[in-house]
Amino acid sequence: SIDDLREVVSKVEKRQHIQAGQLQVLQQQFRKGNITKIAIPSQTGVTFIDLKEIVFVEAKSNYSELVLNDKRKILISKTLKDIQPVLEQQQFLRIHRQYIINLNEVKHFNRNESLLTMTTGEVLPVSRLQKDKLIEQYGWL
Image 1 (cartoon, rainbow, N blue to C red):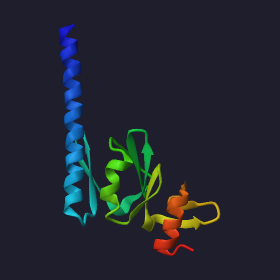
Image 2: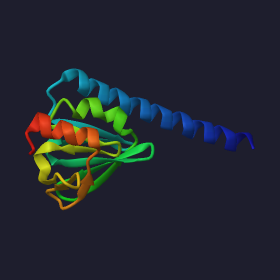
Image 3: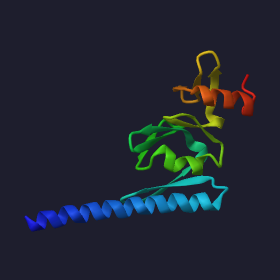
């Protein structure tokens, strides 16, 4: 019916408005430069996460999942490509097409197998290109 169609259109418009707002918040943070928190918009408001709490971010299709040092996981409607510029201004590095890590949360680097063990215990792969970058830039011999 017409009412059902209007309801669907209204939901889509609302979702697009929320996503535009999320992108705007990320862009504002990016422009500020030296950020210590990231705003995670949701339908009920905005949650502020201290960057120090983020261990790594994992790509999940068109979403990203923040893994925090208390092992909480927060799914956000942004891709790694969207949030990479914001995070890489800080202590974060993209190590693989699927992961951005907090360099301060690395527990062990297995050079032979190109694997990072994070402080929370997760083991993440490092791409060949990023392995060389880690060794050169950060002296991880």
